[in-house]
Image 1 (cartoon, rainbow, N blue to C red):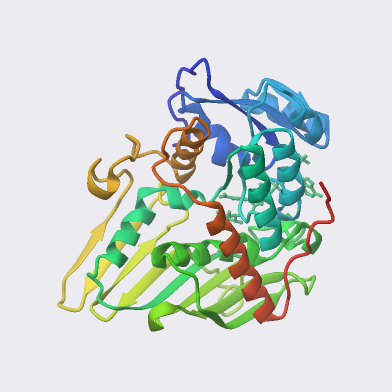
Image 2 (tube, rainbow, N blue to C red):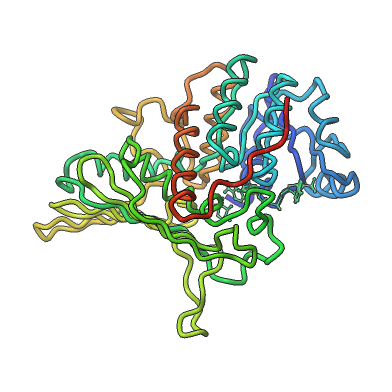
Length: 372
Ligand SMILES: NC(=O)C1=CN([C@@H]2O[C@H](COP(=O)(O)OP(=O)(O)OC[C@H]3O[C@@H](n4cnc5c(N)ncnc54)[C@H](OP(=O)(O)O)[C@@H]3O)[C@@H](O)[C@H]2O)C=CC1
Ligand SMILES: O=C1OC[C@@H](O)[C@H](O)[C@H]1O
């Protein structure tokens, strides 16, 4: 996964430009692109050209720009990767669409559902592809978990418990995730994953947010952590936990990263541990009330038939991002991706996030002042 084989690039490979020398760009795009014959990472732009040059040299990127707009103005670039802080997603995705570029847009799509709706409406008008980069959804482990939940094996589904949380000290206090004006907050950054996964597993929207409690960061408008519970259609319940800075237990015992989803039904339960980065390590355990239990690991689709028909011939080292890139390129090239996250899904995801912020009392992140 860390040093994938270099693919020979196709003559019509999609030329992607990156907005910002963001930390996530190498694992989420540059590295996966190495093994994809249909992608060239052709350019990077940063607010400071020297920073862009250093990043380009480090990653073997041909073109460098000292402003995002210059990159968008380059006619040789087909698509943009937008890993800017959340609060800038709307402005730069709209500008990219205006320039006729396809956009792979980091999660969460925007600060508000209204902005997300405008992004996808504009993309449709301009005939370009925009994808919110919910990478975990493109990996077969997430789909296998959904198969298990919908198969009836667990009986009538009663509850979902999902978490994504990391110990204190990993995120610096100056991280974009703690900056309200940039769309910061644990729910925006991490809580969006378990919430999205519950929506994916149920293929439905929560009926209501039953409770939401935020632990404020230094800026009290930002949640360092959020715990929320939901009611779901069919009387099931759900809970999510997200935390940018889990406190050590008893003040000194560091807590482990949390990244699991457990689904309980009246006949059994299933847990997917590490739905976010399954390529590193994951397992699905299924325990049924008749005393049986098993563990599955799903690095590649188990077959190319039935529900797996149309999945790419993947390698076990394919990360969620590599699967996602496969789908993004397929969509742009007019082929059928193995999975796709539709515009309405991204809009509903932001509606759900805003509902949790409303319930916790923190309110939605600030809407962009950008006008196209
Ligand atoms: N899919 C995934 O697994 C992950 C997704 N993400 C998402 O990616 C995005 C970026 O996260 P991450 O890479 O960790 O963030 P970084 O802080 O590393 O990168 C953000 C980039 O935004 C640019 N930028 C533009 N304006 C500002 C500003 N006012 N303040 C700070 N930075 C600015 C900077 O680019 P420049 O070089 O021009 O200065 C910087 O490189 C977020 O939306 C996050 O949610 C993050 C991690 C994992
Ligand atoms: O995958 C992730 O894990 C860590 C987060 O801070 C990041 O933004 C998220 O996308």
